[in-house]
Length: 384
Figure 1 (cartoon, rainbow, N blue to C red):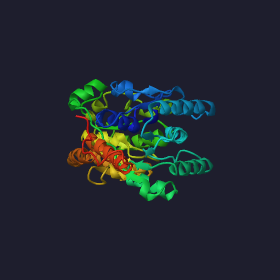
Figure 2 (figure 1 turned 45 degrees about the horizontal axis):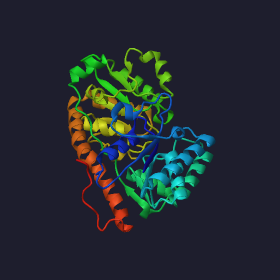
Figure 3 (figure 1 turned 90 degrees about the horizontal axis):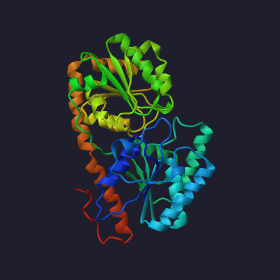
Figure 4 (figure 1 turned 135 degrees about the vertical axis):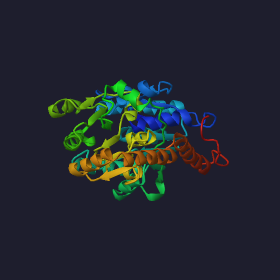
């Protein structure tokens, strides 16, 4: 039984969809439970995974409301008693808390939780962060396996006293990207000049992602490269702030959510990530698969996706440094081409969908073998 708060466009929903499709149906009978997306969010199932079946729990969304959360806990408990899963696997913080609480109440034998990132930096005040840490410590004590999407994410959690080293398994994301149109056609579809250099921001337009920093970098880049254009593919509560950037109006293109993100990457020369905190960002993985170099803040496990100096350039949180890196790649055609080619090779090798499915199969198989459910780990992992 797999539980996630909501299937909004982003890394967790993509990983969940990949596992729902990819794990061998002869070995795993899966059920997915999720709430609904919030305002200014796009539903990943509607946009990219209409084949994935979801059992909806209306009160399981992102917002924390005690009455709704108790209802969600009751619904998950009832579902577990009916389905009687051997393994509960939760994704995202709220679903992790409610799902594991329900699993304790219903005595689900094995509990697994994936940290697609963490809430330890940049989300809450110090006091609220301490509450989150205490809650995660208690939840870790009733969890059999803790999955981190990157080594840096795992190390941050261990440093906070969440779980024990032996509980953790590092399973990087895995995905595929549809083939995009040619550069000229992609730019025609997006209404971009054919001769411009294009910088793209792909993801949620929320505080932790720092769209204000993206705008500041765009202003610096535009001073050095006046013909540069900037794309924002995504939406969120700060989207209206982008519309007020009057000085960038002629060069800033707000695309909203698009199901054909491959078209955005096909039109792009550099992907820019400006976040204060990340797990292992899907946008950088997809950019790499499309052969687009990245400039990114070196936070979370970003450095495990972008090889600094090889597939892109990493920076601190400083606007000037991010802008300098972006300008460097835009101005150097040979460097941009080399980094793009290296990014495509590196990302395809490390972040393929089949690898994610096989790693997850191996995790479940180790649990099933240890519990005596299987006689030996079965090698069949990927649904073909």
